[in-house]
Amino acid sequence: MTQVNRRRALQLLAALGTAGLVTGCNNSSASDAAAPLSPIKIGMLIPQTGDLVDVGTEVANGFQLFLDLNEEQLGGHPTELVTADEGNDAKSGQAAVEKLLKQGVLALTGVVGSAVMLGIRDTVEQAQVPLIGSNASPSSLQSVVYIWRTSYVLDEAGRALGRHLKKALDPSERLSIIMPDSPASKDVLRGFQQEFGKSDPRIEDPVTWTQEISGTPGKNAYRRDIATALKREPDGVFCFFAGTAAVEFLKQLRAEGYTGPIYAPGFLTEGNVLASFKDKTDVLGIQTALNYSPDLNNAANRLFASAYRKKHGTSPTAYATASYDAAHVLNQAIRRAGASPTPSEVNLALGKIGRVDSPRGVWQFNQPRTPQQRWYLREVQLDGQLLSNVLLTELATLG
Figure 1 (cartoon, one colour):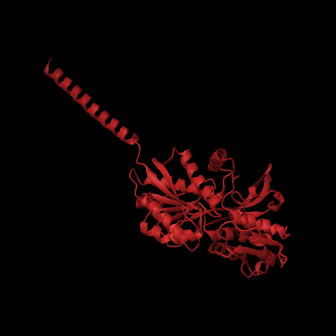
Figure 2 (figure 1 turned 45 degrees about the vertical axis):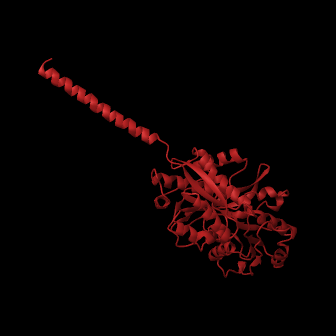
Figure 3 (figure 1 turned 120 degrees about the vertical axis):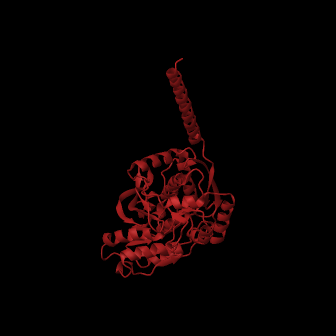
């Protein structure tokens, strides 16, 4: 072999060796990228007893559906959803948070009761573990760093409906307002009066406050208060109830002979409430304001509502939607936080999420860490043989 040929052969061998090394490195990188990420735990607080159990079930259903549609992963990490009973007060909520933190959860979600949300505020902030609340959202929850909400702020439901009814009601019509004496009700009422005008003669009658009842209300729990409100012969009723309390309130309102219009935040007719009425005329025509309706026509809702109906045999609710969105934003934040995310890194990443393509329509977090979103007017109508909250129109963008 000549000197030139020998040199050429050595160059070829060197080139092949380098290529092999690069290929080996590439294969190693591909192998590393394909390796499954470490499993994570997400802690969920929901009521497992009391009158809001059905709401808690919807919250769990929504989050789990997102996991079902994403191979049981968030941000590429195999995800275990760990639940704890939030109870109905600050003490039980704090115990549930501490139980979940001891299990090493990366983030928290859920929370149905306003009293629980307010009660766990300091515990969550001190733990520095992000909480993506998917239901309870009192307006007094301010100046938080680790608490985010994918549902709403409670006064917004009142604001949306107050703005609408101020224009829709005749000048001579008068409303009776009936609500349980609770912080959540006062949030709703404040928003309603803010938009309607507190001094407007159409809502100047005193508010009828009912007792806030923990558990399922009795068959006559509201009758006396309803009778008091109806003595004023109102042209309509504005109220705020949810779950089994909503069922009993509506049945007792009709039993007192009231057949007029009923207006409320959407929780009045959400979930299993409508299925509880054999006499459909008791609820037909009720108008509510909420940030979701199952017949919204967008691609995200078509996927979500179809999958939800297939799994559960019923239409999804706003409770399930907000929880589905909580999983959605966690999925994005955990992915942004990298292969070994910490709670603080996930919290930081939540602040970098922009517009969220949701079944309720596009929304985004505002500065107080709550959604800026659309609110809709719905009416209870028959959809075939079933009662349904049918979308009428968009009311406002709030948040």
